[in-house]
Length: 166
Image (cartoon, rainbow, N blue to C red; front, side):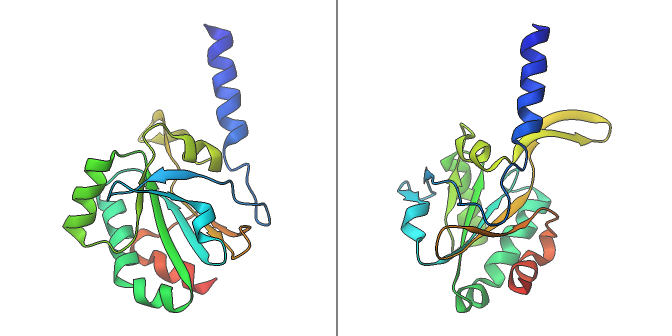
C-alpha cells in the first residue's frame, strides 16, 4: 500500500506541468456538448486556446467561460479558437453551455485522459485540505501544433484579455 501511494504521489508531481512552451501539443480526441467528437488535428492551421477548468457552473469557471464568451468575436478576429476541457460529463456541459450561451466546444474528459496528457490533473490544496483536482491552465497552441504559451495563473474574470495580450 505504501509503495503504491508513494508511486502515485511521485507520478502526480512528475506529470504536473511537464509540457513547456515550444513542445508539440499532445494530440487528443474528445466528445463535446453536441455529442460529436473533435480532435486537436482538426485545428491544425489555426491558433487554439485550450483551457482546462475544474467544474461547470461554479463561480470561477462560470466567470471564465462567460468572459471568453463575451470576447469570443475579438478572439476569433485574432484567429484564436477556444476549446474548454473539464472532467464534467456531457450532460453537465450541455446544461452549462446552454445556460450561458457558450459559442465554443467543451470537451467532457471524465476519464481524465486529456488532463493527464497536458499534466493539469494533480495534487491541490484548499483551506488546509489536500486533494486531486484540475489545475486551471490554458495552453496556447499555434498553427503548427506547438505550444506557444502556457497561462498558469488564469484570472477568470479577464481571461480573454490575458489571451489577447499574448
